[in-house]
Image (cartoon, rainbow, N blue to C red; front, side):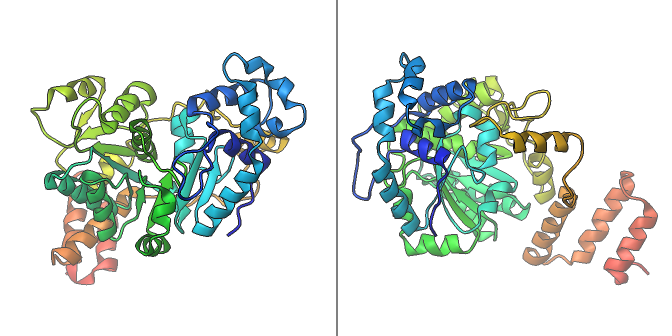
Amino acid sequence: MTTALSQNSRAILLLTAPLAFPGETSVEAEPLSGDEYSLLATWLLEMKKSPSALLEPGSGAMLRDVADEIDPERIAALLARGERLGKAVASWDAAGIRVSTRADKSYPKALKSHLREDAPPVVWTFGESEDVLSRKVFSVLGSPSKNKHYDRIGYDNASLAAFAGFSVAATGEEGAGSGALRGALKSQGTAVQVPSKPLAELASGEGWKKLAASGRFFLLSGSDPCLGARTEEEKMANQRLVIALGNAALLVNSGSMETPSWLACEEQLGKFETVPLYFAESAPHQEYMEPLFDMGLLEWPALGGVVDFHQLVAGARKPQGGTDDTGRTKYREAPPGVEAEVAAERLKAGDAGGESPERTEYPELEALVFEVRELAIKRGVPARNILSSVIDALISTGKLDPVVATILEKVSFPQVVS
């Protein structure tokens, strides 16, 4: 695998990535923070420029307008690291690590649309199945803990999510995070880990390689592959990513108001407000949890099975706040070209350019299939009995025509109908 970087991606990496090598614990140049880069990116948008414009001759004069916020000499020093960038990209390629910037189509859509300008400028991934990130996702977060109770909550709910057709996202830290990833994989589901450990370290392990090659496990990080998330702020950013990937998120435990999981939930409830957050423990709650409940944290209900889970979580994600009245994304990494504008107008007019329409999805039926699978295989209940019970319930609530029900039963299980 050889990574071909666009000029926009080169500029973003040079400005924001530490570009560390194996064995390094720090780097000489201090890359722009997420906030600093967002300030610069917004300024570029206002100037109708792309990040690649900073690589062009004479760009130093263009940066004078942001001198009060970011030192132009610092930007110039970061952009001069071309040789180091080439070596870093080569090392990522050798480890099987992919890199995506906010200017790339491969960048996870959930992060950009949900976090908008707060999405990390760069993410690194490891795994064979990138479409994991485009599926429905259930997020589990919590503070690291040796308490087996928290591990079990993460495991059980992630198993339920897997049977309901959801990928499961978590940091993998001891407690709820590790339980959630194990639960998803044990139930033949897919798992997305946002680790604190350096991605390059994990990607070199044979166990991780085998998991990633299965197509059911994916690693994603917003930290340099050779450094990982070392500070509490970086660990909080990991929890932010876990939440942002999900249709809904479950907070299992939080030891105080200072933990990364608590702070990430406060940020989601107070700033982004797009992913419903639930708390697993029943009342009475610790006093430090009350501010989160005041902001909209929800009690995680008792669920009867996969169908209950799917109905609760599948449509839980709120409309994303990153669009304007036309449905277009407010925040773009670079101004769209002519082709993008034409495509947008065609889509708005209902012209898909000759492409086939998307397949209609029926999440309720999909959930029912997983429910039948769980009961029939794991509990020894005949599938025809389950189908008959479900059909009776649908008829009694007026959701299924009796004639259609009879046909369904005869076609699926002839022995059910005399």
